[in-house]
Image 1 (tube, rainbow, N blue to C red):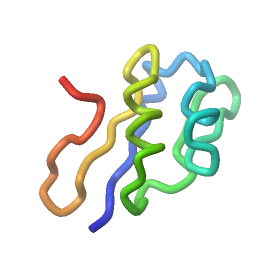
Image 2 (cartoon, rainbow, N blue to C red):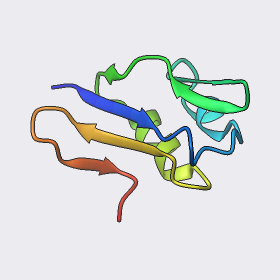
Image 3 (cartoon, one colour):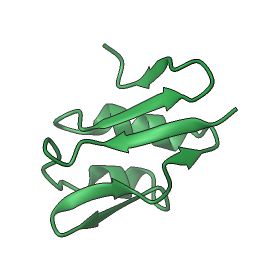
Image 4 (cartoon, rainbow, N blue to C red):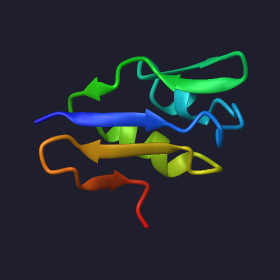
Length: 73
């Protein structure tokens, strides 16, 4: 199973919370976060980063089912 990680660059404010929480999964470049890899193995840090984003710019999806894992609605 793998997860799909997306960052909405239009929504992101570049706070850096994601890269601090899930180092190695996100990087802030030119004031906007981006995932270092769009496909990742399941990892609680990635979900924590999505849940901690102050503007909910990060989405984590289960690739096989398309179910949204984070942020919770």
